[in-house]
Image 1 (cartoon, one colour):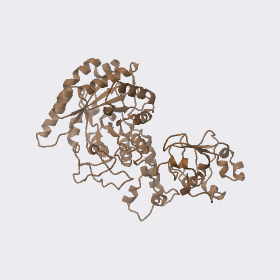
Image 2 (tube, helix red, strand yellow):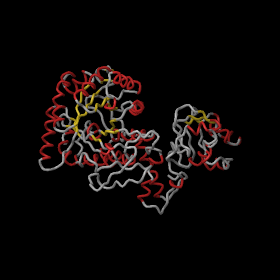
Image 3 (spheres, one colour):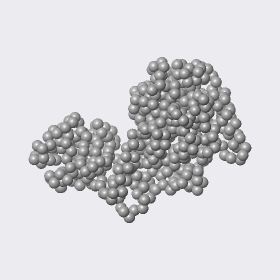
Length: 529
């Protein structure tokens, strides 16, 4: 169970109390993970113990990644200390001032935390979290400097060199996220701003729409009007915003500005800066409409609108009939001509396989069937195939079975992406379980938007904010600015009048609102937030 500190006044007291932890630490996990238990009765005078029996009767349980300054999982709140432990529900919080008055003044300073045992210290990587002096608000600071002290920095979510491997994020919110919304179509200007905000946050692969019949998917009817409004789809004029752990980002203004210079990072490959706007093309008619639009645009001496299309096939016959109105064999038979024509016109092609774990109509999907469809798409010339858990019923075990089956079949795993819906809250855990096995590309949706009109009950895709937070927390690189991403997710949810399904987005936004409230009143908290 993760250790959580609920109150802002906790940090200093926690450092003091936790300085005794090495006396009773037990490592039960690999590098950068730790599990610790201790009885707080050892830290309290007997007079206090008898007044707080639930506080001393059972141990606190720490797990997950702990930093030397105990800043992992620090939360917001009032003036009291709150701790989460197992298993007593009778815990009574004790104010920090009481702890200091009852014998805690002479505990070890935080610099000696975890220094008494070499074993414990070796498990902990250097913490990128700012010091107290950096975190404290200063009335003389400019607003720009204050904005530089991001929530993501405090949460240790900036990418580091622990692993440093780059993972590509494909945000599908403008297409897969919006296509299933009920009511009036989302205005084109809102979609345009959504794409621009994603670009400003550092997202470089954005599925912007689809060339389908407007009466079938009304939310996608304006895709031909949206594409000409977007910034150039590729090139080096757009650079990833600098993560907070490195230099401050010069990224300002709209992303179409040609004055933005390149921003280097040792963790990002050169192609990470390229912008792509894939559009879904279900058949030859959709491709012809896209080609005509692009040719008309280019004859005016203007740059191309996009360089990528996506095609899709179901892994089950039942879903293929519902979604494509044709059996799988017929859909696959129609795709070579579409893919070849697209490539001849300069488009690269991405493939989707839906219902790779379960089907809303026929139940569990045979992994061999899903692998066969993916293999055929790669053989047809798709540069990448995204395996879609349309119903959101996948879990780490079922995904590992599918992943192993693809490897056994000899598929190029560098060309396989994961597309997980979060219907049962297992999307993120499934994705993270595949990262150690070489997953390189992840589909996600801002604010967790999404769904499928042909999959009853399926909810949105895994939130982009949650994926980026988790990957950065684990030391991987995405080139994405989490704080700007959260701002965009909050903006989008408010604009659409829907709930923001990103837990990370809601948590970071709440912290920011709380900080602004405190700073507005001139208040100062002990943890500098």
